[in-house]
Length: 191
Image 1: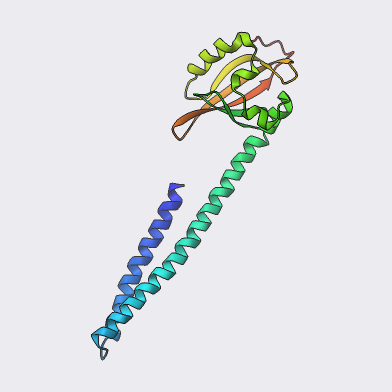
Image 2: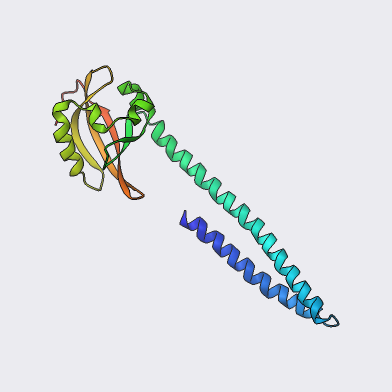
């Protein structure tokens, strides 16, 4: 993102310096028999022309930059949303879900609106809430395999899932991206 902004600024600066240098030289060569007021008028015209042309160029460069950012965002969003493993992102302070992928909706049976009105504690058995709070509090900044936990689906069915997560800093607050792999019936012990 910063590279695109720097590129736009560099292009603008170089074109501005070239315009000033070359247009002043051309004006100096042409001024011969012209009176000073006409030279001043031409100088103003070249300034207006510069503003119009560079404004248009900046507009096009910013559109191109924004288009690339949007394309990149859509690509990465699709990696999350179309991932075959249930995944979600939650706010580490409030524990509210902020994003949930399609696999999680299918696996847990909740709608997106239902998930977004819940916290990560709402999909856990009541007896696991204290342990979940402690695990979230002690979550390392790097990738974390939090082990196997019990989760509750919308219909009340309990499943065992291996939780892997990573803290994402977004603005002022930390969020946590989680992937839940169903290990029910595999013999892996719950935490």
